[in-house]
Image (cartoon, rainbow over all chains, first blue to last red; front, side):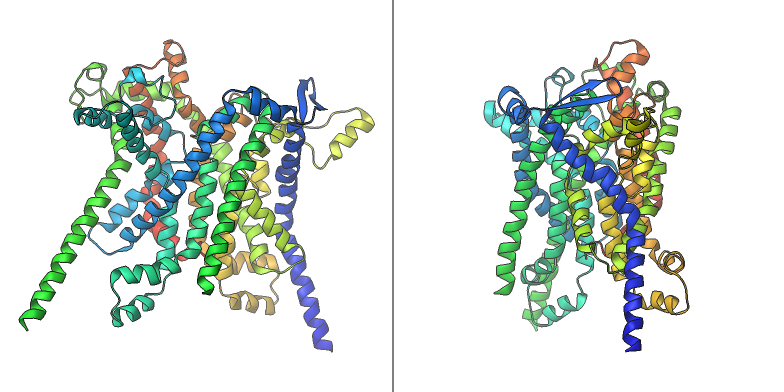
Length: 300
Length: 320
């Protein structure tokens, strides 16, 4: 009886300590995240005017959303291109970074060099430099002002495709695809790091056992590496999705940034919320599908 | 006997072919990573004449390093911008390394009511793009108020005490102090994963010996988490160093490096009276020099710590 009481005392104490450690974060979260989040909803439903000493809000219903979706010529275009980019880049980035991580996990001469090289995007890609680098390595300088996406054309690619005798639509398709590879590979930095960490946490005894049983490399990959990486894959997937949605080189983020800086708060809130709802919805759908199918598969 | 020898040879041949194939793939993709960097370095070294020449060469013979780099340095106002980067962004990064650890320790070690809800909140904060909360934040920062207390005071007495922290370092330091700064959700998540993997026994022994939770945290948990602190520091510092979005929104005239590099064309135009946003081969050389100047500090840090960083990544257990 006495002992039980003491135990309860410890749990109560521990839960108090837990709250003590997390309280500052919770307060910060409320002030800097939850309140602004709902405030943004209110902004998106009101007409916000700037008056001396603050702002004034007037409720106007869905008018902001109507404006951005039906009257604004650019917004829907930009959102749909952002979403398509998101959808095709996600699987490519996942696959590419997984393959590269597997290659970098093997033992060979110069591995340290290659690892250091492949981690370089981690420190550079999130900064402003990358778009400038792409910008400068793009084709002739007169073309620069016209190209809207950052890495539309690269010197050598244009020339090579022209030399091969391909022209017109096909040529432009090939050049854009090739130049997008730059963007894709530069987006793989942290993913490779995470996959590599995941690969190293797979116990080597599994591989030893499978080698004794005579499994081929191919079987090893499908029956050990791939399933053991499933948790990491979810993590990397979530991270990649967040990274793609909030990529500050994308046109949508640039648009929002410019609008905030010109103090257009109401329609920008609507734009940000609509974009987040669409992209977040797709994210949730992907995660749901994954957990549904993966759950089924591993149970069977 | 013959057959097994042949088989062995075939196996070795396959291995060699695979090794060559692997090297080719790694080199090809490595080239894609290096290409823009080398290109910018090459351009930043070239003189005006060789930039305007119709033939392009990788290793420039006609060097003009001094001119390009002094121009970039001057138009970026590098010294001052670097100082702003340090006192605004890097200070926030350092604060964040500490505060996120504290919050994560609470999550990882203790059970309490509402923890699940708070973890959900953490996950949501990782997913929601900063852009949404930035808009109201700009408005609140121009009249900072904690939970409406000062606003109420204004209503009652008519005196507006709400400070305007836009264009000051507090826009960075304040969220960082609460552990909700730039991408802090991910940092807390990394910490939690690591703390969960730490053996509890040591801390329990400290408990038994009468150490309080703060002492246990400082003297037991922190010293054994050097690995994770390194990882989190690298991410926190690099993300802050690279971030231009928040500076562009929070700050109005004292700009850190990142935003200056982003709008470098404008600053070059301003410094040399070319007119804003005019792109010539010469400005391209200045711009590339600026990029090199921007990347070099983080690159040096990276080269110094990369050996430990790569090792620590495996040991942190981010991957659960």
